[in-house]
Image (tube, rainbow, N blue to C red; front, side, top):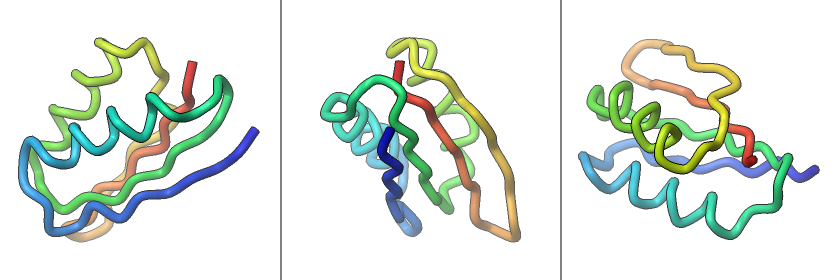
Length: 74
């Protein structure tokens, strides 16, 4: 299992979700992807994206303006 990360701070909707979808499509099952975003809409967009892709949201946290999501590829 590989771990990857993406710094999506500063990007506005829909770019974070589009980039996450593209990265997930190239990952192997079981891999982890950690993303950092500053757009508050990602709190809605990322869970909605994962409902479409079937991947799992392992954790979600917020520190100041930065939202951090950890996703496991199915």
